[in-house]
Length: 174
Image 1 (cartoon, one colour):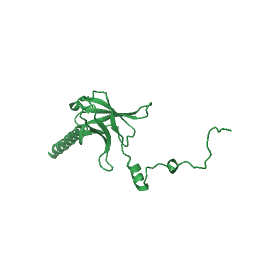
Image 2 (spheres, helix red, strand yellow; image 1 turned 90 degrees about the horizontal axis):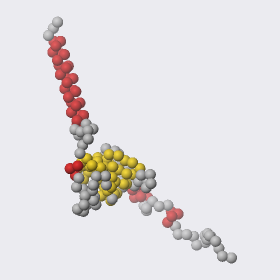
Image 3 (cartoon, one colour; image 1 turned 120 degrees about the vertical axis):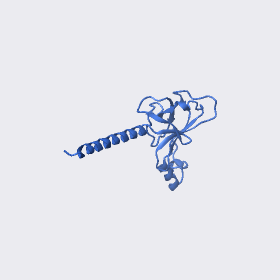
Image 4 (tube, one colour; image 1 turned 135 degrees about the vertical axis):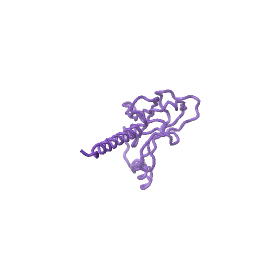
């Protein structure tokens, strides 16, 4: 037997330990060190008429700084609005009650996120309350179509005035 065998085995073992340690570091970095355990957050709700490409786990930002994430997205069966539940970090628990929420996009084709704009009211949003002022996502394809073809996108028949010689509908007097 030569003495090379144990050295190679030691080198392979050290390499495997290093690979496993680097995978652990990547796992911690991708979960922001939370590993799915509960963190100090509180929920807020927001209603939108158009979500665009917003998905669960999208960031919630104020001034470009992430302060939470989108926890869930549901459809209200009565109002047919999208109800978005936001998990906000408890360090930011004093958001004013007149805070507004918008769905924004990072860059032209970037990811969608919820942007919050705090107001100036001294009252604060309590956990579970709904943000009253919201702006839906902007549909870039629809906006480009309006720019290219002009107008508001309404059909020509809706803009036309009624014909003068059109028969009147409804009961007529004899």
